[in-house]
Image (cartoon, rainbow over all chains, first blue to last red; front, side, top):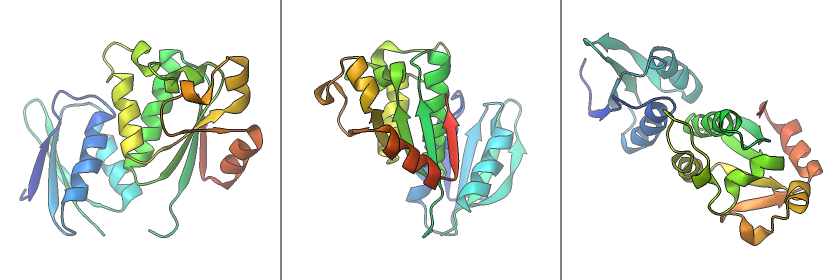
Length: 76
Length: 120
């Protein structure tokens, strides 16, 4: 999936991927897409939940061999 | 977002299994753009004493000092139970910067006005 900014959270456990993503997305313009690479097993539930609560749009995830890629579009 | 949702996290113990849960929920709440108030009472107060977070650790989890600095950066409000301060002999000077002593009435006022209260 296309993205504007990528954030590598591989090797980090909960809650750091979400905390790092919430910080990083503040640097994006509205409408831009953030990619997050993560291997914490909670991520698959966590990133959609974080989007649900913040209003950012969860665009989906892609699987690599040993990690996941999450795509989030920044909302106002 | 004019009406931010608010959450109160009561941290009543410095046992790693409790204080970690309190900090994780508070920081992620901040990361979800919520207004977060932490209320440190009884031994939970040790986490916000100067040098206190350094003494609490849990293998495999991020250092508590890291979660504490994340909480501050996210604008989490840190409040300390004034009775716990008295019984534990903790002065305002013993607390890290930015921790506000409050009584039970203020803590309850925050809790009644919040959308979510978590107690650990």
